Length: 235
Image (cartoon, rainbow, N blue to C red):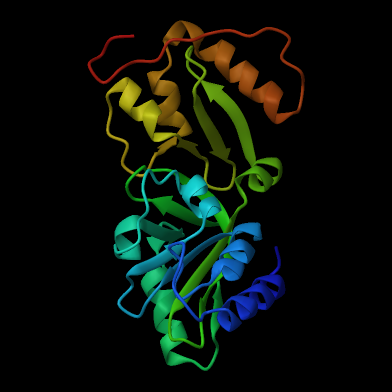
């Protein structure tokens, strides 16, 4: 959804901010319904950075298990660009300039601090006429996957999605993978060299060949499994 569409719909929300309801700040039922039709995740927060409303899509993308209203947004998510949390910088720009909107830079990651879920996102932070703030974002992981990343499934369990960031030569892996192996998750990133150091020596060539075929968009006719070294040294 374009920023102009976001602004037009938030204008309708501002006009409908006459009473509280459904967990949205000063929003009537009509405003709440509009909010849920938006194809973007939406989080409202005040000048103290306390969350006052969130729509279902934002909860789904962040995999938040409960309503975060009443918590500081900086305790719930971080906005990462070039390995730095830029949320404070975006808010500072809004306060120090005449603009009411700051766009998220290209290749921005939004990370859930509780669930460790993270994804590439586009969107913006807006300051509303009421003084509140609105973070509107769209999960672009699928689009980034097609353009920049290699998507595969990790391990025999086939439940750990990972993405290969060609620009940074790093693998972005679901936090459960690190937990499964018993190694620190940190930023859920690992270099390709460190990843292959955990692949069993007898299966490294086979896996490397499969990766090369996927990168060149060649079909891999057969599925296969490979062993990974756990944190305790076992396979």
